Image (cartoon, rainbow, N blue to C red; front, side, top):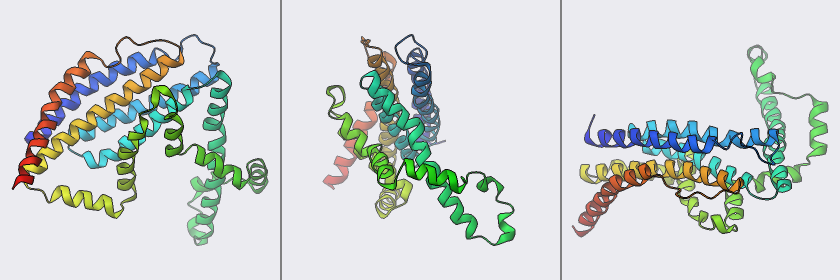
Length: 284
């Protein structure tokens, strides 16, 4: 284990405890008495739970110096957090409408797509191979059901709903809210994660640039990159906690825990190191 991994493993370990502390604070709202129905309360808590589990995996990747792969997980955490905030805002009626779209309508639209894709796969295979495709055949809806769903959700309506629930549209909508007016900055990190998922030329060139750096520059960049990701993971956890508190009309005296402040203070030295190394490189 080299110096970079030792450092990031230590910080990731510290962050895991802070992440747990935020989840304890957030989960206290899961079943708290409110005007929210039991069903919608159940739906609401699923995103914070899912984001928490992915965040734990994300810290493991940072501790093993797999920051580029981790950008893809961070994209998922970011999107889950943003969707949760979106679902938590509005009147009871507005939240109920959004929760119904998220939990019922969007999955139904996905079923239509999934059926069509599964049919294309089955129809494109030789007969002997389709006998082993029982698990795929199970997702295919019968023609009558598909026709009924397509009447209920015509193609134009499906496209409109999917567009409305895209990451970019949700962030634009949230940015109109006074509590979340600075969320436009989340497009950058989300974009990098998307490029890496799609393996486009920009993503590949990012990796080439990183791997071709001299050892000092590469290690300084890895340390700063890992520290930034750790900070992001905890910040998203704090955002979910904040959103839940606002949903219940509560004010948080101090959003960022002292342990998180202390960790950020420790990690700042590696951001400073990265800036110094890059300044030195530019002056050569």
